Image 1 (cartoon, rainbow, N blue to C red):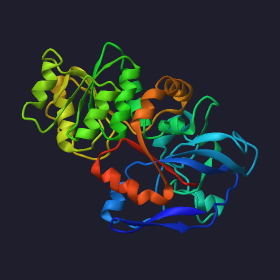
Image 2 (image 1 turned 180 degrees about the vertical axis):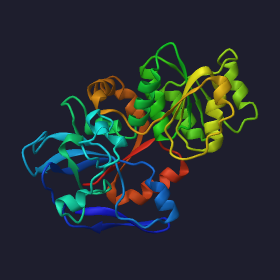
Image 3 (image 1 turned 60 degrees about the vertical axis):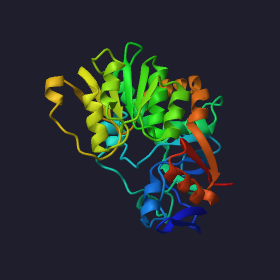
Image 4 (image 1 turned 120 degrees about the vertical axis):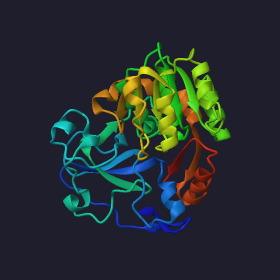
Length: 335
């Protein structure tokens, strides 16, 4: 099968790897859609790898044994390879599993864990069946396009009574705008990149504040009667942005951190009485409400997905991501 390899700094190639093997509850999925995430950073820095990607939707090509899916089913592939047995997995919070398995060793396979590829292997219980009335492109947004910030909104119980601040309008931040709007919230955002700021306004954000403006925080306060927002989501992992999210949130408010990394300053948290949430992914018990939401916001997802490339043009896609002039980008491995 074909897969993508980073071969040098800002260089990549299509390479051939053996078709993956499966065993027990593992399933072989033909990838039709591979949403792109932060792999462009590895491309930019020249981190050599031929195991790229963690988002996918496609069609079940083979099963090792009868189970939860059958050949021909359309599915979304959830990230990671958790144990499926611990209390976290049983509760639907598999993403926090501390006992992940080695799928290649278990299946005796030389490949199958990348999604910038034509095939991937996954345990059958980590495949979300796609209803007939949803496209694979829309369903694939249950991964990073909408998934982490869906979880943030669930955890913070965002509603129509709230003003929500989204800090950082990359693809995940744009998904946060959609998630908050779906719940009826008023949305403010923080972003300096003009393309993404404009895209957020088109999605329905009421205002986008440039964080480089000297009065950026004052702008947020002015839009919230001097109080600050009810809830904030940081999608950057940039320390200055994380601090801004905290400072812009009213007393007794909530702040969710979706971006990985950064350094959070604690000074404001105790006097403000803030509740902080670390968010990675969503709970599988929310599958049906989440899919219902995607049905309702398809017109917004069509704006969030700004570009689609054949996998053979992944370098063009990565170069576009480096400009910031895009929302979510999809790869098509078979084109």
